[in-house]
Amino acid sequence: MTERIPKVLRYAVRAVLLAVALLYFLIDLIFLSVVRPLRRRLMALKWVRGLRGWVGTLNRYAALLLLVVPWLILEPIKPLGFILFRHKHHLAATLLIIGGELIKLSLFEQLFDMTKPKLMSFLWFARCYNAWQAAIAYLRSLLVWRRMLELSRTVRTWVRRRWLAE
Figure 1 (cartoon, rainbow, N blue to C red):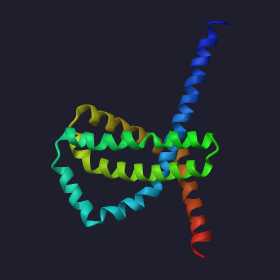
Figure 2 (figure 1 turned 135 degrees about the horizontal axis):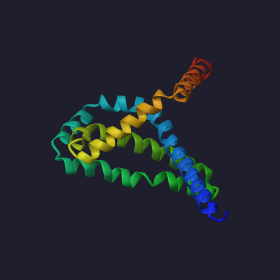
Figure 3 (figure 1 turned 60 degrees about the horizontal axis):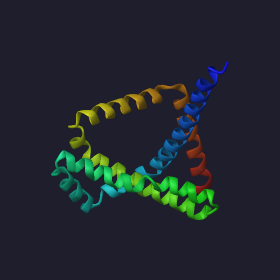
Figure 4 (figure 1 turned 90 degrees about the horizontal axis):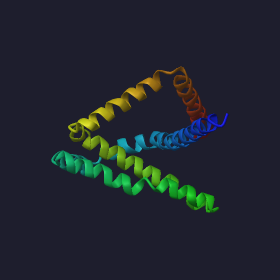
């Protein structure tokens, strides 16, 4: 009986960590759906096209650094927001999480798109990226994913008709 306790605890800790990680990435995915239309508008700007040309001249290590440094600076914003929320600074926490996520995701997605060709020259990066793409493809093939997508489209249509049409 006592041998089972560590095994059960290990499974419980893994379940909690998985739930926290899923929540963490779910927040990113929600913000990503908001950021994509903003990103399209940003890409149309002339100076962004010039920036894309400059990034194209970087070597692969500089491209990796260009992607990692902003991510390392902006990623701790979400946990800081949760800490503020815990200390009952709800408005500041909400603004920090929303603003930080919008900036992080729009900047990170843009930089990733610009540096991806250079980064794919790293074998480890290409393998990780392909594994990530396979995992996303698998998740999208699941029935629960399709149902959630259908539900989100229904909610989006309802919101547009209810509040945006007025």
